[in-house]
Length: 523
Image (cartoon, rainbow, N blue to C red; front, side, top):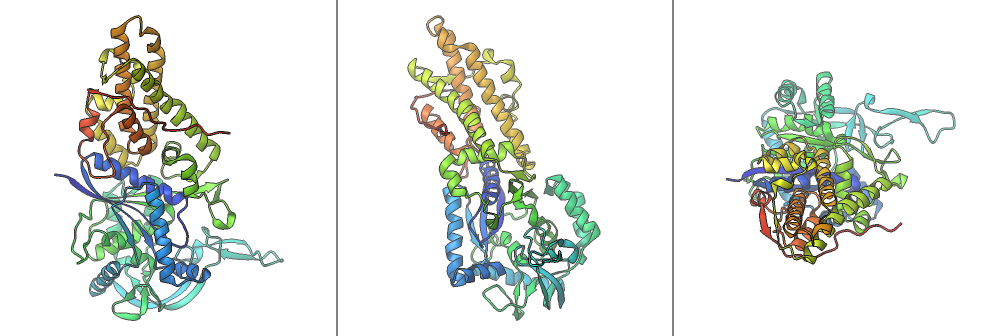
């Protein structure tokens, strides 16, 4: 029986088009989903847009558009980018949907009946950019750009703008009552948040400060209204965080999915909401807690956070058009350890593209294809006697030989350790190149027919394995290599079951049919 899981991207704001940071998060989730499908999991993979926010209203007003019209347009732009990137999501959800509204209102009523909601006055700061309430100690001081006297102003550290000071009646959620629940959750789930340093920050935050938080605003607009007070709308984070639950329900709000086997990919700036607020909110209404939260950090350019005001935003569709999806995926996961801030370097990006993808991988494929076509090699096969020391030492090849690949892949996913997996993959590519170069099959073809056939058949065998092992990351090349050698294509954008069968094959007939996979970039 298939095991069911839910993997999600962050719920992206719609105050602008996705940038490379959004692509990074979506690709992390996509690799996770594709790999899990290959391991006989039934995967629900959801991505979404967060529409019920103040900055959404402001953005629509800036563009002189009706809010609903703006939301329709920008949510479609998000969807188009994920489709163009071939992100294998199963659900695209909008927080403005009627279904989600009903879910949030139903949960509000249930939470209030359990006495976890109360009304009080809120006085403090609110950052529209973060859509978050801020304490004064959360702010930083910078020189006032409008002052010639060197005065300082307090701003949000992420957006460098003064937050709004507000004083209004709000509804609050009793987070304090869940302090010990959260501590026990963290204690009993040592990898609830990955990476560990981000989890340590979350635990430290709970140790030092747990306060009830506001879940409403006194706004009368299109946001979700409180079912028991029409003068209040639901605060963006309370509403959005239940969208992960909405996607598991049918239109009649009946559960369709196992919600407790859930993995979230989020950014570090929203870790507090997902790992502190949300577990408590779920516990309050007796819903299961997610299994694991993967936290990414920020991309920067010249060590500055990407911002439209700084003109340093990397446009995802332009990048895709120039380099292709495989190059983007490989650079982001081969060079960058998930959980670290990273300075995006175009020179390094092109280096990975030209050297890893073209010089080492594609040249290997083309060389072996050319030889197999020229000399009529019509099958590939494992020859144990040809294993070199470099091939014997490779973690991925050993996992195949010892029937431990499934465990290796599960471990990669549990730790989102894509980087070390791809380094092992690249070492296998290099070891295969060395094997081909050292044996010099093109020189012995006329001298020893049996020997050159063994070498060539084994080379094709290795290409088949390398290609399968890259199928979660290099999805364009994977299909083209299969076409070139007539390998069986496994579509891991759907639920599948034959990956293990294919990876363990030791012999098969091939038909060579070349396709250009990558082209070297011109200077």
